[in-house]
Amino acid sequence: MLDLTQPQFVKHAIFHPFEGFEDLRWKKAGKLSYTFIIIFTLFVAQIAYDRWCGFQFRPLPDAMFSVMPYIMQSVVYFLAWVIGNWSVCTLLDGEGTMKNIAIYSSYALIPYIVCQFVDVFLSHILVQDEFIFFTVLQYVGLIWTGMLLFSAIKAVHQYTFTKTVVAIVLTLIAMLIILFLAVLLLSLFQNVYVFVYSIYTEILYRVRV
Image (cartoon, rainbow, N blue to C red):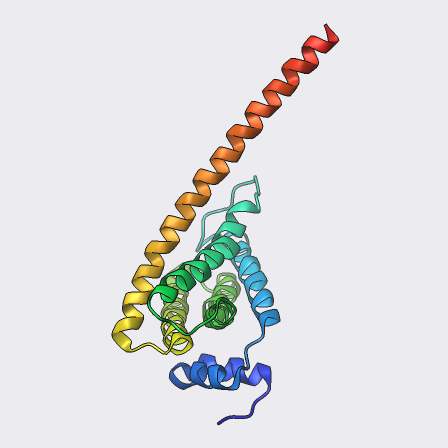
C-alpha cells in the first residue's frame, strides 16, 4: 500500500486511475479542502476559456458579463452530479459516502481544468491553421476526465464494470431531474417574490394616498 502525501495521492490518482482511486479509498487520503479548491479553479477555468481565448479560436465574448452561467457550469453541475450519484448508488448498495464521491469526482476534473487553461494559452500563440491542436487538447481533457470519473465511481462504491456503467447512466438521469426541480423551485420563489412585492407596493401606495 502506498504511503504518499496528499498532493502525491492526487497525482497518483490522475496518472494511475485504475489503481490510484483504490489506493485513495483504502488509505482514506482524500481531503474536502482540495475539492473546494478544484471546483473554484474549474469556475475560473470556465471564465478564462470563454472570455480570454484568442479571437481566432473563440468568438469575441459579449460586452455584458454575468457570473451566473459559470457558477451553473461549475458549482451547480458538480453538486447535481454528487447528489445524483449518492442518491442512485444508495439504492444500488454503493459503499461511497457523499463526501468521498465529491472528493474523488473533483480529483477526476483536474485534467479537464488543466487542458482548459492550456487551451487558453495556446490560443494566443497558435494560428488558425493549427486549430486542430486546440481541439485535440480539448478532447484529451474531456476523455481523460471521463476515464477518471469512471474509475472514481467504480472505486468509491466498489462496483463491477457493468454496475459502474449503469450507475453513471442513472446518475446523469438523476442530474437532469435535480436540475429540472431546481429550475421549478427557483421559478416558484420568483413568482412568490413578485406576488409579495406587488402586495407590498400596493399597500404602500394606498397608505401614502
